[in-house]
Image 1 (tube, rainbow, N blue to C red):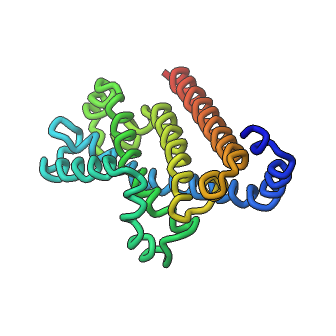
Image 2: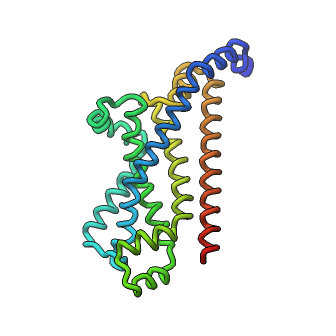
Image 3: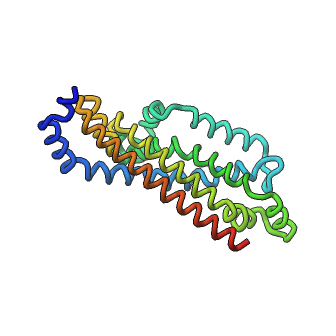
Length: 236
């Protein structure tokens, strides 16, 4: 088995795939991951703010039914396995981008799967803000919108950066799974060569690239979160 995996023919094919297919696959993976994360944050951030501030004891109480329905929808989307969600999102992807297969089409299910996750992460970060700071802002006559924009979000930026790092690494793993339904990127290479052709060495290299990307994203996110946290503490 080892002789077949590391045979000269296999190594030669690996070098050829590295030259011909990996550059585009790496670009597609990074492109899909970054765009999906950005869109998930755009949708999930305001939803997380509503969940954190719209409760009975929040700074911007909303009708209980609205918060309950929003929570149910978010929990429902989070509970659906990503593979099933990808298949269910075929019609929506076809409606938005004109096709349900390919790199761009995979962004649709990735966003649907990740924005509820981001919303819960944002909610958790905002709930960690010291209530005394919020009360002080309220006593100074700040509006709920001002409290959210000028107090809660700035105070929770280190936590938000840390949680967004978790989100982007999770979306990266989801993007690899999209190769099963025709999505591009490293997941497609891993599926095509590792599963369909039993060329495990090529699949292993694709996995190594994914691991490297996770480590890079995590290291950058942790560094930014720590640096921002130190700046906030110095100001205090």
